[in-house]
Length: 484
Image 1 (tube, rainbow, N blue to C red):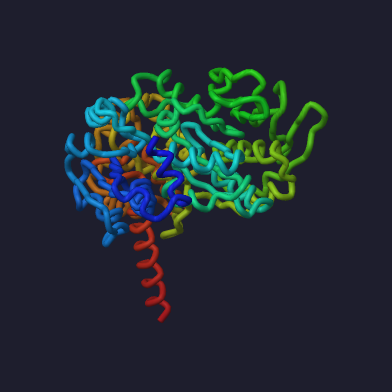
Image 2: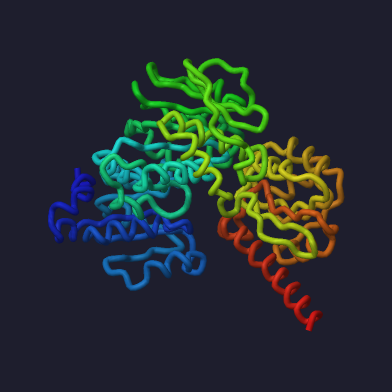
């Protein structure tokens, strides 16, 4: 099969694939399309990138590929001819398999894969130490914690997957038996479901309602998530959250070891728990102290679960409590997830733009007490809003909403506090800065997707940070003038 020739290209000579055409469906904003383009052009292939977004929308990604040879762009539209005449199609994970263009390619015998398939095919020949992390929320934080911990003992450890960037960015850095941490979305797992890939360790952080604008129902959503452990065998491990519904949904293959994490110590089997400000790990033989919770720098109960997930997987894989605590204590969080930006007029500003579901936004809100201004709203994912509305009514002092279809639905769901709606983030931030009381908190935790007003949740978060930092700089400049 031609894919294997691409994979083995490095060992077969410089001109091996100069007559082959790879079509990349979806350039995107997170680096996946850019990484794929760089990888296949480096192998001598002709590359066609086709995306329904315009040149202006994709400006940032296009800038990274300017002056690259053997590369053609088709933007704002797709052509069936391009799909039919390709030798290989690399599909963005978010593109459904029933896309008419994908069906057209398959009908004409053109192989369609995702970047993760190419990646796992290649690194599977080099290492079996692959740790996959999935879940509705907490994937990025848990994967990042694991990376920090494993990097202490194993300097060759790598991280990739759904955590922005491309798996192709690290494909040539994987060494013999090195650890590879992969954050895996349901779309990515669904894209490899027919391949039977075996992950040595799977970490399932939680399972909540999400992506019902893509999946028919929650059963379909979980079916893709279950690819994380579906092909595991004897000697492999699945780490799950016993305090979440995922613990009742998982049906493990025989001989795969199940280990759990959670807050309390009343559980059967092996796993981690917290007690009197400390984290412990209990096996069949003994209970070991791992670390003090005072070493954790992350905010919120949900982040404690992320820490427990990482601690459990790392300790079971043989890392010491000292190595684990060192890795956890050095980690203060990742961008757009309860990210502290700074203080303006004695009010603290936090960027939680990655909270694109009501459940995620609820966790953000519950991480704070006292005077809280919430900036929320956006485009709809068709998820339930009752719990989100209830939490807002109980815990939020001032509510600021950004326009969107999700916002329209939220406003009809029984909000009992006053709110203001803005059609741009700048006015929302300005309003929050004026009306939040001193020593209060301003939290961007939208609970909805960002499309329409922003390219994605990262664009939204970056704009929020820019606006807040501008306010902080103006305040500093004013204070400096006052002193002089």
